[in-house]
Amino acid sequence: MEQYKKEFIEFMVDCQVLKFGEFTLKSGRKSPFFMNAGAYVTGAQLKKLGEYYAKAIHDNYGDDFDVLFGPAYKGIPLSVATTIAYSELYGKEIRYCSNRKEVKDHGDVGILLGSKLADGDRVVIIEDVTTSGKSIEETFPILKAQGNVEIKGLMVSLNRMEKGIEGKVSALEEIRQKYGFAANAIVTMADVIEHLYNQPYKGQVYIDDTLKAAIDQYYETYGA
Image (cartoon, rainbow, N blue to C red; front, side, top):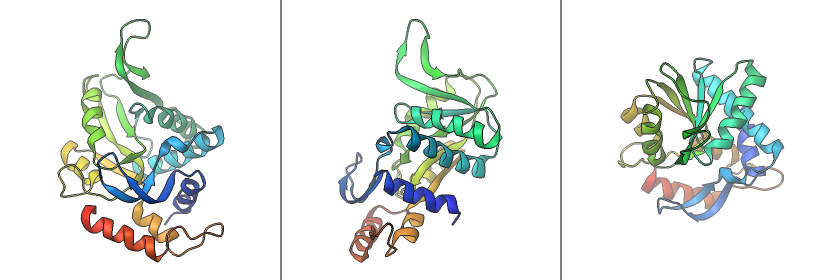
């Protein structure tokens, strides 16, 4: 596992973005782990988060894109932080773009924030986490309505490795099959388990035998 991935797992734990216990997800699933990107709240945290995303995007998509699209609402700060980090790390200016929940009819009109999209633009979508892939169902038509844009792929911070909406393959694999573009994550839950299972971090074991058993049971039902 790359060093930045190990550091990112520890970063999620430090920021209390990745938690372990018992949680009810938006999908209704009862999960022994939960990831909430809304817990990144400081300038230092957002700066580091943008750097981790930039490294993962560069690893998976290189410099072969023009726009980073972050769906409202959590995708807005993600896209801004990552475009800044991409410029600093790789010296390439990437435009950021996000959508509004409601179309604005005065001033800066339209459904988009940031850069407008034009025919030929190559877009990478950035999100916090994809559990079922439902958010892409909303994002995809918005992007395609702007013109003949090419979607290079999706980048999320954590691949929960769960079944998607159709219930057969993972949400990220379902996106690949349905929309025809790549879908990747900075880290997977397998990476998290590998790095934290019975391995003390700052004096605490976050995934002990009991929690590992709960995670295994969860994946027996929802794992892909």
